[in-house]
Length: 338
Image (cartoon, rainbow, N blue to C red; front, side, top):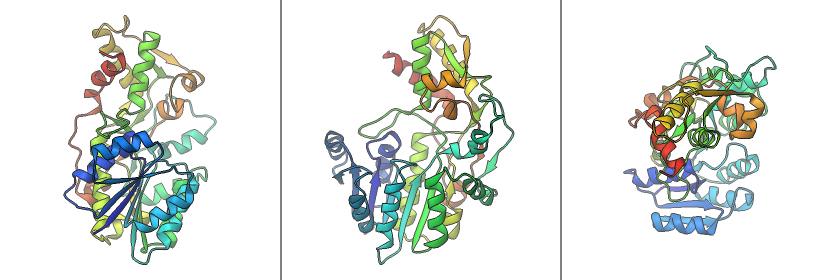
């Protein structure tokens, strides 16, 4: 039976991915999870007795390499920036005699790379640039190559170019991820709770600049199913070229929304819930955003729009969870402790 090695299992996305592969009809011989904190490892083992935890972190590159070498499928959900661990996974998979499968996390901020590199871009402004993750696969690869700072993305393209088909890789680029996670440890997303916390602390919601910048969004359960289906494809020995390698760039997304729209919803719901007195949204500068919000204007003032087709075309998946607009009240009340 196929074996899985997963990183990031104590995280928001990684914990949901772990649950998704356990809930999937596919049965695995072993599921091993790299976990930094022993207390988190205990929670994971209690929730999922079939999971074997391995205590260590991404900096333990010899351990990461060893675990990757033993796995049919590697799901690296922990980081899209830790290049040393990515290289360690590559070394481990390269030692295997049989084909292996590697699913790597990245982020939809890739689609904003040109904006971020432009001195004239005003955070919070709109854009009409929309990528199609099937029709524009070559354009997306070119975007990655044009930005060497996307070190992990570039490395995975190198793997796809030089090691395919011995190593079949895929990269998942999450947009705004929302919903309450069902993993054993971290159950909160980043962007929506952050906007809610700022609104509660300041007494009014905020947006970067004009709030016109837009991203895609996906519920964490829909996102996790993408990982579970890719893991299943790997365990099944899937050789479809469009699933892996240079074509295997996945941008799951259910609904596009501007950050201004999100902030307006936060403000309205907070006022209706008598948590703040004003439904007005305050414009903040990129400098203020950097102090108030994780990722600052990168996560809250850029545009990352995609026509998401590959997950349905290649994995036969459709988004089934509630839209992001239905998430605002739940997240706000959770942050308020109500």
